[in-house]
Length: 166
Image (cartoon, rainbow, N blue to C red):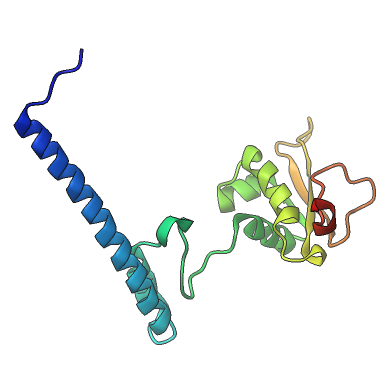
């Protein structure tokens, strides 16, 4: 059974809700305006000051989700994985990826598709395969098999070309 609120409790609850709404409005307004200021001064202040400022004001920008501004922009996760693989000659073990980027096998399935799907142009698509661990190996291996053109016999994520969407 729900307890009926007294008039005083209802009044306090309404006041608390109004304060939450006002606080959220002020926070959003402040962040939106501070981001404009940050974008204007990002070339003038040093990287540490920019990082401190972004940490203090937060990185949210409206309902679009978190977004960094300025020099410290972090590349997408799939791009970080591709960079790591390319730095290691196109090959990296599960342990390498986990230790450097904290990404496990389940998330890597998505990352492998994103390396194809989210590439800015078809020439920048990166096709990555996974070879599970064997009896002689402790960890599976991720390998770049092609960049740009879809490799022969590819059975992974298939990109949807713009002409096919219509």
